[in-house]
Image (tube, rainbow over all chains, first blue to last red; front, side, top):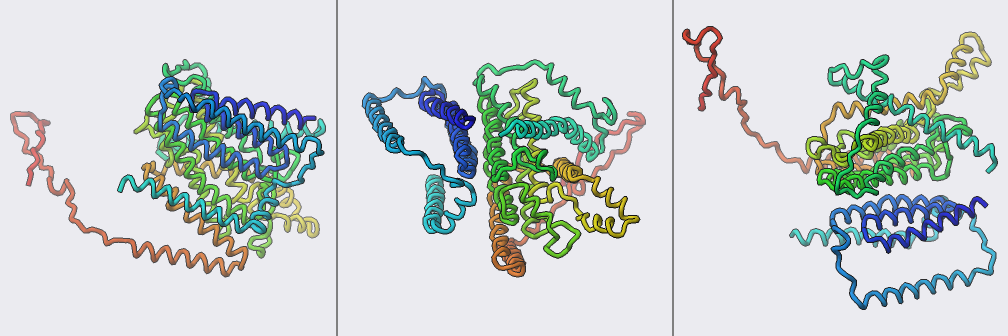
Amino acid sequence: MAERLVFFLCALIAISTAVGVVASRNPVRSALLLVLNFLTLAVLYFTLTAQFVGIIQVIVYAGAIMVLFLFVIMLLNLGSPEAQLPERELRRPVAWLLAIGLFIVLVSQVFLVVGAQPQPLVEAGTARTIGYAMFTRWSFPLLIVAVLLTVGVIGSILLARRRSA
Amino acid sequence: MTLGELGWALVRVAIVLGFLLGALPLVIWFERRALAWFQNRIGPNRLGPFGLFQPIADAVKLFFKEEIVPANADRLIWALAPALSLFPALVAAATIPWGPNRLLTPVADVEIGILYFLAMSSLAAYGVLLAGWSSNNKYSLLGGLRASAQVISYELGMGLALATAILASGSLRMTEMVAVQAEPLWGTVPFLPNWLIFTPWGLVGAALFFVCMLAETNRAPFDLPEAESELVAGYQTEYSSMKFAAFFMGEYMAVLTISGIMVTCFLGGYLAPINWSPLQSLAETVGGVFVPLATLTAALAPPFWFLLKLGFLVFMFVWVRATLLRLRYDQLMNLGWRVLIPVGLVNLALLAVYLLYGWLAALVGYGLAIGLYALWAVGRSRPVERRRVILYAKAHPYIPRQTRASEGQNAYVAQEVLHG
């Protein structure tokens, strides 16, 4: 009962903050609402016994990436929201179309499993299980991702340097 | 969860919060007195015994100050920022065990204890960053940007230092990290505990963690975000009254919490520096002198050792502040990215070598790493440029002119310096 209460509370906050991210005209407030959204998602992971996933969500997304986002927003100094460019005429209907399409795809996935009794995965998201999975069965993809990230870092350094040279 | 469990949980929370809030004025008083002692001053000594009530007077003063909101501030975020800087410091101590009793400590003995601390300390950047931005003041903004860049950079070194502790103890759970350190030293010396700092990787890790800990709490010599000679007071320039006090409280609570983490991970947590259990068995078998000795050592309870180590680390904070100069911004970034992170990575790799191939291979690895670094440093060093530096006083000696009788006895006239 308590778990269900936590779930609905978190889901409500998550959805309302997600809407707020898009609806807010102030970029800093948008970013802060996104942080709140990440934190509620982390709580949802905790209730699913995926402590490791939840805490990594907080460390990586809420703690590192969003701080960088805020940093950049503050450096850009976007000024007052009214000064921004008005949207072009064509973009708006296309965006609505894409959003509705994505919504239908996601909701249809929910209806596929709605009859089945959900089987809780025991300890699927703990540090031990994730560590074993990543460093035994999936160690090769893990290495490839690591190389990809390194390439990305080197590429960004190269891009930053070219201008000054 | 039954009602009894809930009650115990509330007791645990109350103890930790009570300690953090109760120790706060004591730490502030201690810092001011110790700093005064370092600088050959007296420090606050008027109010109460040894000036102990001075922080209370300061708090009352701050409480009655007028709160001034900058005209162009983003009101909501401006008011939110002090709370955001206070919150992580308050909750981050939840996984630190300060005694062996699991009913009283830690608040939550979760599987991911150390990661929880990392998550909370990474959230601490928001308070400072938002305070700097929402004040709409260039000094505040620069302070906030500096703080966030610093916190992000040093979090990596801190993570690497904590990774050595995690790898050495084989657990993310903080109570297990302490339990591992209770074993005999290096597996051989029975009466000394195996604190992580007594191993080479632990020593390097603890040193790394200590540096990162100073930077994470924005304390001297890493207090660039509030460098008063450049940025007035940095991100807290526009804050007054209780909001200013909230930043102050957050900083000192973070000092306490992060010291607790270092005690738990590297200094053996609540364990005594000497394993007393041989003494207990002696008291049971031999009796005599050993009985009062054994009761005495048992009375020096684990919380006492925890507090002693915590107090020592707080003293280290003050000691470093009184001793070292503030770093320049490029020095700060160089230290974080080009010294701490490579050292942490090599240290972590060598710990892995120890775990896989034994201590001999690890020692060879440490020798090799130090030797290679020495070779690189020698090859990189340039001969010192030799220049003749003549002291100003030597080049321009002060020769007082003869006193003229007409100008009286004390009429020394400044000698025109002879330029030569």
